[in-house]
Length: 139
Image (cartoon, rainbow, N blue to C red; front, side, top):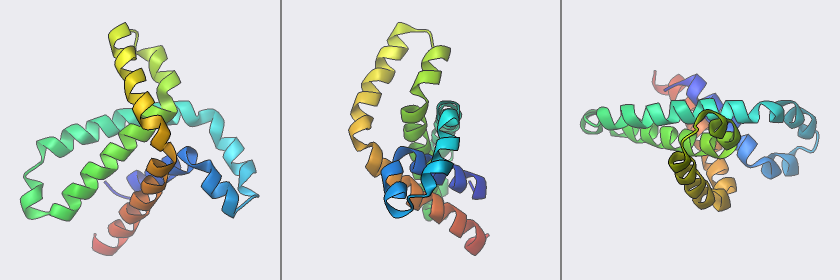
């Protein structure tokens, strides 16, 4: 976890909640249009890294005794990265995952997450900013 994780999480949040960015900075539409074509691949890669982060967080649950803030941040960032990556990269992931049962489970998870995409995006921006700040302040 660090600067790269925080920046990717903030970028995922911006891609998930573009209306927030566009309402505050109308000229950001040009920049957002440059990023959107890569959204699926970026989302799929982030979903894989988020899933791996969840596994690592569970395997390192002993950090909860020593470094509770870091473990909670790591778990939260990984969960946000996985969920937003899945939401944004579902098209690319469906090309890779051919199993009908897996695609059905993915569709069920997407249908539950999609109504909350904007809120999850805002939380991801905040957690991403926290990751970047904490890396500079406490490292």
